[in-house]
Amino acid sequence: MHNKRFASAAGFTDVRETVGVHTCKGLLFDDDIFWRCESIFYFASSQTNMSCPVLPNALERADGSKVGQEVLAGKTVMLFFSAEWCPACSTFVPILHTLYDDAKEKGQMLEVIYVSSDNDAAQKDRYMREKHGDWLSVPFGDTEARDTLKTKYGCFAGKEAPSYSGVMRRSGIPSIVIINQAGEELVHMDVDPPTEITRKGDAILDEWAAHRW
Image (cartoon, rainbow, N blue to C red):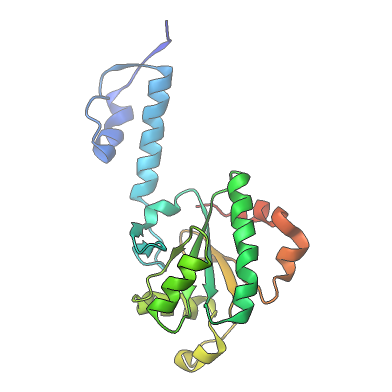
């Protein structure tokens, strides 16, 4: 016989309100079910509070489908500033691919969000479809969001500099920036060339894992 626990009204009011579970109040649960209800509450609460002010509410996959910021929960979030026409970016993308795949193998949740400096939406879509991993992007049409990120972190292509007059350009493309949920910069790396990544290899993933949302 499983050890029984009583789910008090106080303990599950938030669960009921957050995820619409109306059967928790005043019922007996075994330990496993009780733990799962607590997990649902924690997960649902984290999703409810999931919002990064520097990112758009809708992010885009390579197939054009949209997802919300809730997919970033529990992950290390990396902004990838790049463009298809950039030779140095073409050199770095396979390295980022390897890091991303290594992170998955190690059970480390890494989410890459592409911030495009492509010439047009068609070029950006082709780049994601043919060269990128299973990554997200800021929609090309959301120029306000892309401009906000390039301005805030100082990452943009040299030919874009006239569009960001007065903004300190800290690095060109390709560059990566790891941020927390508040949009604060935790790692800023010019990866042309990717000297630190080359030196540390996949051990750098352990450092980045500490920055999960």
